[in-house]
Length: 83
Image 1 (cartoon, rainbow, N blue to C red):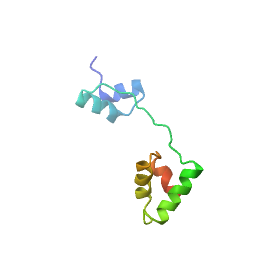
Image 2 (image 1 turned 90 degrees about the vertical axis):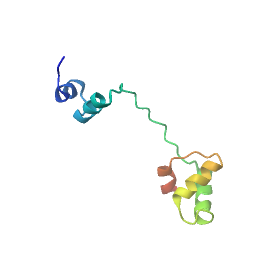
Image 3 (image 1 turned 90 degrees about the horizontal axis):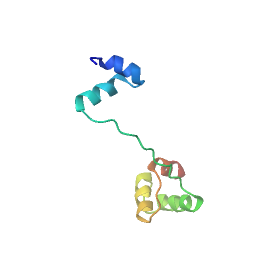
Image 4 (image 1 turned 45 degrees about the horizontal axis):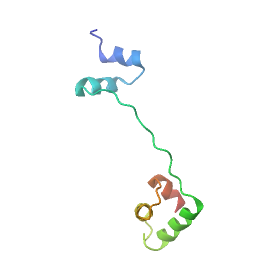
């Protein structure tokens, strides 16, 4: 239709740079999927604190990895405040 990126963005209610990116890359728009928050339950929090004080040597990212190795899935951002 000959519309510019600014007009398309206004029509769709998205950022102009988003329109430019789709025009430039030729990519079809996808649907963004948000994962559920993965919170630590009380038992996992206790285990995380124990790991933080011992094996992880005070590093929350290592605690996250150790919990993941044990099958406890939690987001790193949820692990940090717990320890």
